[in-house]
Image 1: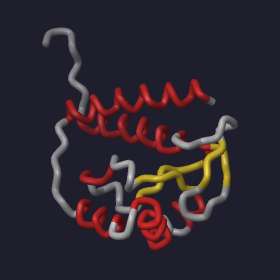
Image 2 (image 1 turned 30 degrees about the vertical axis):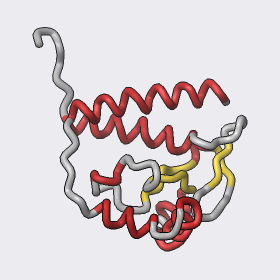
Image 3 (image 1 turned 60 degrees about the vertical axis):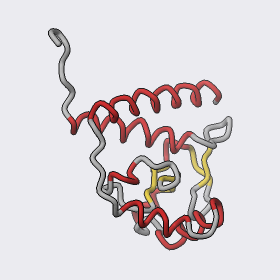
Image 4 (image 1 turned 180 degrees about the vertical axis):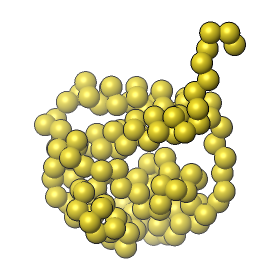
Length: 136
């Protein structure tokens, strides 16, 4: 592959984290860009929100799972440790009983996502972000 620079895995992961985070925070935002915190319901501009993880982002099996990651205000996500209990209750209410437990089980599965798949997911989420931004 002459002329093509290989992207490091760490840079690919960082790029996907950024694109996925923006998509999570933009999804469901109002036309004014307002987003509701998943755990406390406060409304803030999506740029002021975090992409909060129910199960730690250190666990690659659920790191980019849309069920595992929801918009959270910085108070819930950082100051209050992610509000994991409330997060789990809301997941079960939204997706059905046992969802939080299933995500916990899934998060403990070891997965190795190929770098090329991470790069492809990044392109997909960047495109989704553009579409959402155009709707605001």
